[in-house]
Length: 421
Image 1 (cartoon, rainbow, N blue to C red):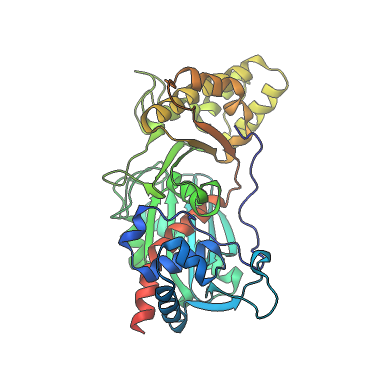
Image 2 (cartoon, rainbow, N blue to C red):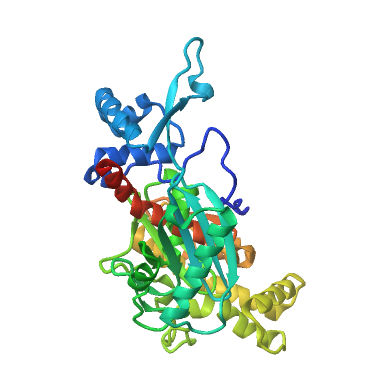
């Protein structure tokens, strides 16, 4: 286990650019055009020589020269001096390629319980601006949700001083059951049922708005910007206002047949158990998520119920100070989390599980006792136990994952448009 939290990925990009996106190609690359594979490889590397492209993608040097020349003519790539120490030699400077990121922007947005966030990024994935706005303390209608998205779009564009015409797409992540293919939110704690959020937002703003579950957004953030960049298979479990899970298989986000799988928080761990906010009983989330802990904190601390964040901070402080009732709440949640993680290992057999999200600062949830119980509940005969890493990302990582969703969606479109032009 890596116990220390990771730094927030939303930092400035220095020269040469570091690149964003998966570094391992995965089997899916064969179904995409070579030009797109090259474009995505350059974005992932930040800056790369033609010879490296040829070796990484397994295509001839002649084909790389021809295709990159076309991409340069389309205004998608440009030649730069390769300043990498590994390639520095006497004589003529070696030439590398990098993405032309200017003038092509996407926005990533996270819709949440208390605070909505957004980031504006260029085509290379560099953050240009971010914004946050309070979320209304109620379930939103379709119009209200589109209003929130529109306000965030205007906020980040204004902050960066960029034109609306440069915007190519918007990615949106939120809790609940989301049909990614149709953009329909079937159920969410924030919104009404069967809400066609993607189609309506796309109509209103005149550009693609891609919707997905927020745990998938966090998983994309790991795949594009974090520890998952060099891994083809891993799982992400997040504890925030709910409990979510994302899974990467062969370098691709796995969503299930109807794009609504991996709902770990709503797997059942107790028949007729605690009431979950989905309306059913015994869900894992009802024992681990912040609203579940805050519900018990009011009794343990003899306080009137307040916001989950306030109650959790008070509960954690009491547990650290030696309050046995407060500690027992975290211990119980940790045991249920161990059960959930054991089930993930038993079903998917991942090499790595990343525990991520703001609640990872409550270290009782990933104490050594929790991980020991996870191992004790899992059949590990004949295989190495799954490794667990803790990533306490900042709040913007969800929106940044949504920006990766938008970038992935528009790359092919940008390429097709440039070829037509």
